[in-house]
Length: 73
Figure 1 (tube, rainbow, N blue to C red):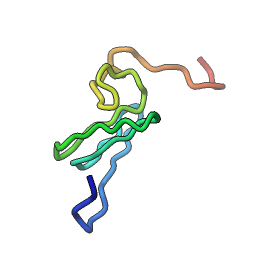
Figure 2: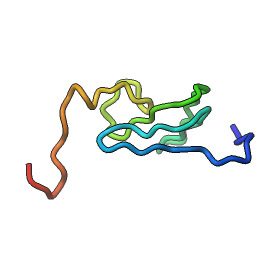
Figure 3: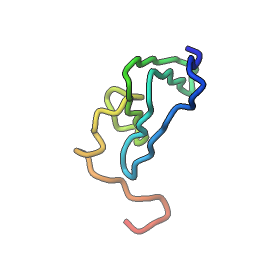
Figure 4: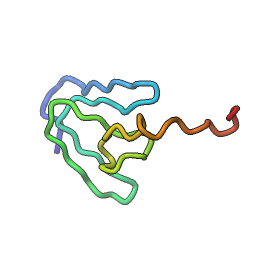
């Protein structure tokens, strides 16, 4: 799905949350599989805990935070 607008997409980064991206979007995973959303804003999971990955289902809220690698636990 090529971008049809000359305006760049807006991506909002949230600490301990998903990436919020103005849609519609295509997400290509590491295997080359393409997932499409035509919504006006989509939440892309960054913690990989979502049952609907790559879309965020707020699972990160229910399961608590994972300790950072190399940091205090």
